[in-house]
Image 1: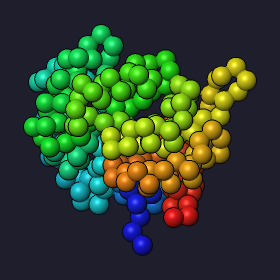
Image 2 (image 1 turned 45 degrees about the vertical axis):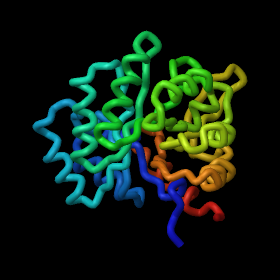
Image 3 (image 1 turned 90 degrees about the horizontal axis):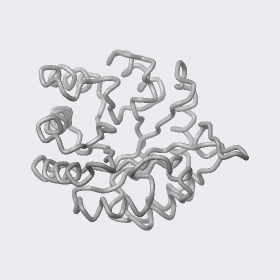
Image 4 (image 1 turned 30 degrees about the vertical axis):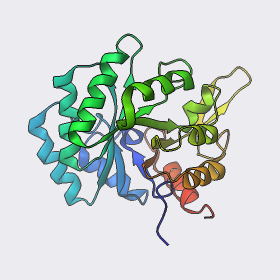
Length: 249
């Protein structure tokens, strides 16, 4: 039986930021049993147009599918931000994960929306906790109103929880506008500090979240993002892949 979008998981390349070159990244991705990525700027230039074809050719030859790029901070710089869409087009990605900033979000969302329409792509707002703009439901809902159907949300599960929210409830609240998700989990101490762990071992109710994504008809990109164990994240990421794929339908 084919995997649902929520279970057909990839990995955020930032998880492998210790491995600098594209061939090293590819080797790490394959070692955890994956062939799908969200590609970040640690492993490719989204601004240097002269590199786009070589990057795309290398990934294609290795059988790596780029689901999304980012996370990119949109400020309203049309010329610079157009290059991001050109890169995404070159590698076959249909999504860009995004941040917006409180002092220029109106310009940022206007450019992101216009470019997403021009390139037939989607922009997904990455929630990044309670200490950063785009972290609250109020902010995200307003940005979605400004962005129209081309702009949706990328639910980072750990940061959603850190901001005092519930990924399951957000999946329901934003059904139809959930364009991506980062699977991530935090252990919180009694003072509210956090450290990363294998997804499903702490605050994230992984089975219920994946089931909810299936129920709302989620069709976006789903990637594991694991920022701990920087020099050797592979074994934990591989366990996360197995855990997601092993969930009952």
